[in-house]
Image (cartoon, rainbow, N blue to C red; front, side):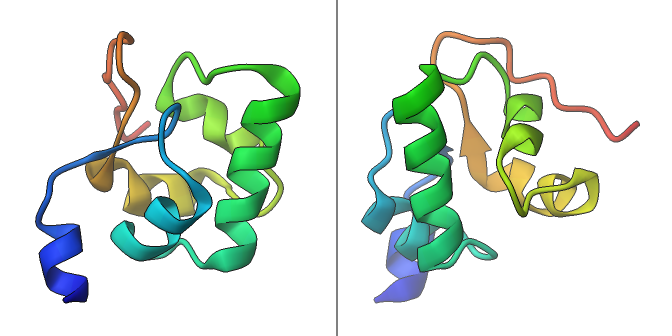
Length: 82
């Protein structure tokens, strides 16, 4: 079932629940999913995938691994390996 969830396409970080992030994105567990949602609740929607580096526990290397599985609706998803 986990592979079925991951096969649904990129997860919108501005819409996903803790459960969706945890279950559909390889590399995001319960604690990190909670941090992402808490950050979004406190500061508002993410404007780009790069904004995820503001979340404790997400650095450039992890973001590079997560980026193909994530999207930001309404934003340019132009994450580039810098």
